[in-house]
Length: 534
Image 1: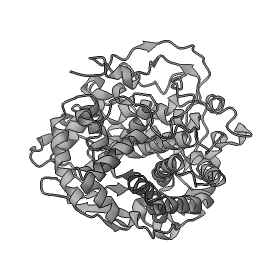
Image 2 (image 1 turned 120 degrees about the vertical axis):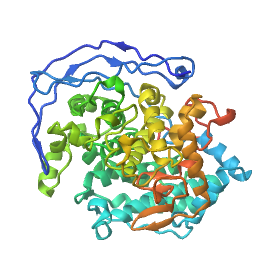
Image 3 (image 1 turned 180 degrees about the vertical axis):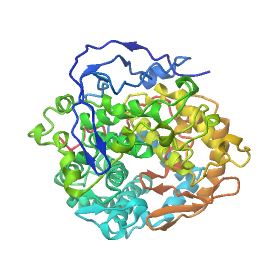
């Protein structure tokens, strides 16, 4: 039985404005006028309500806009909390205390996952930061060493890891190490290089994760230093992520970073933009046969909230909102630094190309736009998509329920493609397995919180968890593990890589067997509204 409610719609007051088509090219983006027509938007269901109902329909999925129309629709900015819960990203304090008790009791899988984390360099008691004023990376990390990209990635993961170690061990040295890393990187000004906005998205989410935990649990982090770190996120991340409507796992990474920074900085506009883009894009990334013979067109940038709408949400947050990240001229930045993005690729409207020419027989429930690129990029994008949903859940918004059919279909198909016990269908014979990622957070939600049966995902997770017994190696910035027999891949990105870290430790069996309530729950410990912004 599906535990999610039917998603209903309601009309919103509509406004119209003339539309000027956007013209984009790789390395140059022309300014476009987004319109202010408002379509019906779905009523957000709360996590509490999600447990009581029995059916779901994806009425949120609206037909894609006609690019030749004289006016274009835009969705209403979703309602966001007036204030955020802290800590309120991937875990609440109640959840973290539960995990701590399981570690102390020596129970599995928490014990093995903790011992694995403790053994890696990110958890070293002597870890030192490696800050840069500009972090620059090339594609796949090429050029990332001298440019600081991998230093930033490693230090961001280390800050989050040290924060978790502090919470689970009560050893104050870990907390101070995390503070030292966060403070050191407050000098960061911006990002550059060919992989510029993706690097920004990866690290933006990871930085805020560690900072959120330390601010909530370690009162010795000086408020002035917290304010400097928060200002760094405003300066070096949000201007490059704002309206950065990209494609594939890259777009989902942007969503992840926007909501994560939004919560830490108490920035409702950043959070709302990330949520809005997630809602618009997920139906363009995962296919359902309900969509028809072809996937939904990725013209989702037409539904991006306007700068003025966002500024209204952040009224009072900045001394002058017109000087904030919301009104940054990203086009000028890209032109000055000779940077490109995905707009030209998406604007061509080449759906077969964007879906890597998947054969028609592969268009089954759960196909991802990157499946025929390789499964690794699907897994990476999926983790970023689910991180966004988990953060929203902790803030009282149920993105999981909104796209339950789409997401769980992906999980079951992707798990089957990874697991050698499941023969590959002929249509998928040419799929490149790439690397394999974890489904722990999503599985915990749909199976443990909501009681949904996901047998193929469960079988895949049981193959992953023996990997907890291995200590990952770190090479060229990537934390990797040799895959166990049974997986169609040689290795997996280890439990800490890019903006994904320690998911088996933080979410395995989190809500199973009545461990914790399924709702977003009261946050034990601190309920501070945060000091990043007043």
